[in-house]
Image (tube, rainbow, N blue to C red; front, side):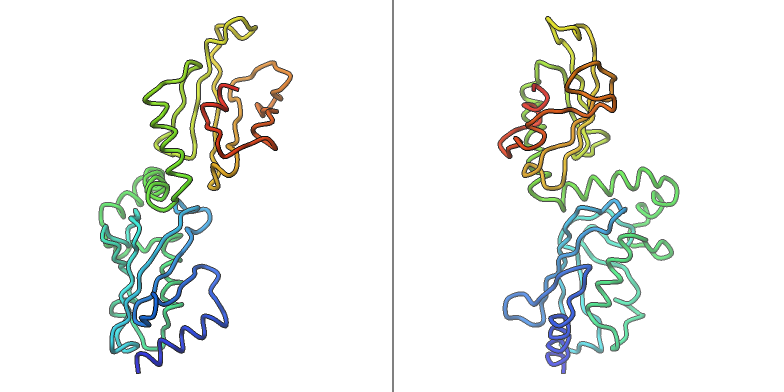
Amino acid sequence: MASKRILKEFKDLQKCPPDFCSLAPDNEDMFIWRATMPGPRDSPYEGGKFELIIHFPPDYPYKPPKVAFRNKIFHPNINRNGSIGIDILKDKWSPALTISKVLLSIYSILGAPMLNDPLEENIANMYKTDRSQYETVARNWTQKYAMGPAYETISKELKGLERCPPSYGSAGPVDGDMFHWHAAILDLRNSPYDGGLFKVDIQFPLQYPLEPPKVVFRTKIFHPNIDTNGSIGLDILKDRWSANLTISQVNCS
């Protein structure tokens, strides 16, 4: 019974794949599936790639599947082991439900946590009392545990700057956000900017280093290659960008 039902759901998913995740059996074992879910837009999980593992019981669909996150995630309804506290995986389970509907519910709580019955009370309290702090921590966890190559590249560059601070000034993350940095450029000797302190905003794309960072002056500056909004007309930030370049080399330019 279970294998027939699981096979039917798999065929249905092949005909009409969900747009909020991808999922398939793990190798040839139809009772173990893996899913990949992007973080919802306009949430602190945006840009993250979350992996879930699904175990179907032998008496499925009369018993619910076990679904868990493999990435660490900061969320009121998901504990540090990846277990998910939603009612349809517990007492509200029904044989009429499908794994696609379960995953849709999980995707929904990423954008709108269920605070009436949280697995992580402390996180739920933070969400209620200090939403900004909750989003900051959740975003930092997303970057660290669910963003892969871009986060690793930026972290490596930051460690390099910490080991060997640049001569032009300083640069580093804002509030722990590895994809948003502030830089300070000074010591521009033998130029009309000598003695000035120029603040720069740096936004790394999720595709970094395959795509260039967005670098903007926050301090007004009178310069032929920098417009009144602080945008910089530098070829290495456009068509001459290379994945071999670093943010330190950009700032030196």
